[in-house]
Image (cartoon, rainbow, N blue to C red):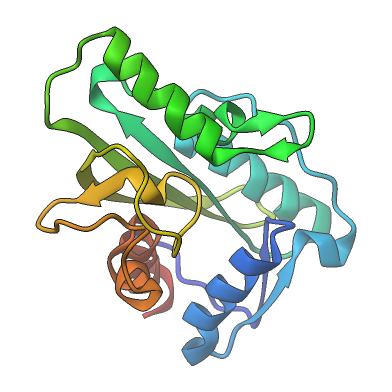
Length: 203
């Protein structure tokens, strides 16, 4: 039996203002006030697991214990089948440079690796998101979302972020980078996971 969320304040275990706003909008109908980890001056814990669920749990439990409030975190990334699921939980790491994240560089690296392996078309991949809702007593609930698709080159579109310009979801011929943001958000891996979260803990 899934534990219901019964409070009125939820900590979103992120320092990303865009992600906070996106989550707060989704939970607005339930009268939940969302505060970010930054609002409590929390540090970001080391993400030491090799699964999305493992890293989501680290972030959510850290924030819940530090604030005494329920906390929600997400961990997400892209998994490329011909690269044995890479970059996966290391999606953001592949884009790291001394001057910040460079996703065009990461996308080129990914495509070059596929070329090196002579990976056949279609070069299938999936965007994955795992949400963890944790309580201060140590209980948590996990929800997964996935959008399958394939990669294309060169990059197309400037609407999204991360790997969006080379990812074409199943059933479409445009990349997430070319898609209207409202259309993309309605079907994204995060939206799929959030639907399960709302049904399980808020509905």
